[in-house]
Image (cartoon, rainbow, N blue to C red; front, side, top):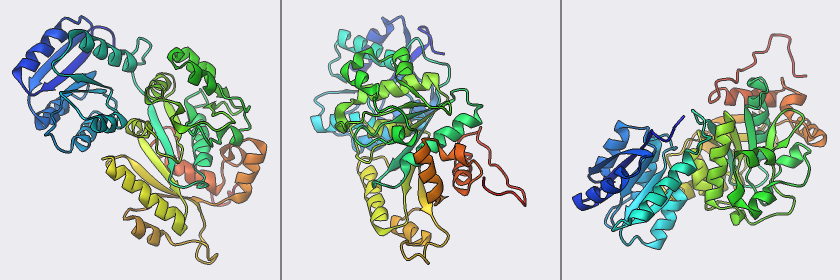
Length: 399
């Protein structure tokens, strides 16, 4: 656990005057230690790689610097996506600032540095990411996304959270965060009350803390804790990037695994969630419109310099008899169209999922040995240590 005597700030600036000014400011802050070096983006890459455990990185960017978004994204990957970055600049364009904010930059400092502004900004970023109730080890965020509606991403997210929670002996090891403010369906899948405590968060976001987050969680009979969305659709931007960041940070202090169900629409905070994720499962189906939309989804990521994210493609509702049913394309055709391999295929089980929705109980509990659940379990076992694949005997069958 980070305490007030071991926050370390790394600064990379372009000239000796800024270096001396920043050193003078940081050295007057008893809460932190610091290192400030002269150099360009290549120097920054080396310094960040030498010590991946910096509490905060301050990076000076000039107008002439090229491919800043892609470079910053690569720096965040070196740090595991968890170290906050602050940008120091002079006369940064609004559009460029907005893009970097979407990429996850925590704050901006203008040159020449103002002492009070610098101190307040650094302390604010430190407090936001390493509050006094922070745990010694952050947990893993597993995100489910989709480029088209009706792909079954929520079904997979609900069952994935259930499988992980059970694999960890049901000790509230995982939580499910439904971030689809417009059409979130986690509460419907689990037959939870229509009222969502998220409304309290939207009314008074400044009150968000660990206790409030715990109080907002809905409890399912399976033991899973869920942050549901309101019945009435809300604008996707009703929740700010800062609130999403804080919510995820608080959840990581409480739960070893956080499963996030994302909206179809890209938001101002999509990049932030993706950057924090250990793995991103994007869910699709084997039909031409779905594959086309998914290809557009990947194009957007590339435009935002997010092509290096840990994305895995899931084909949901897959049938071994797809071509015979005349309503599917093949895995090979989908892979060729996307220019990417299909990582996982989850079997179609209409009856099981229908029963699950009718009863408000995850399929992972209703029929844990079903082909659908076993496929999901096998997928999760590759990223979650506690999840083991159940090997069937010669005469076993799905219950």
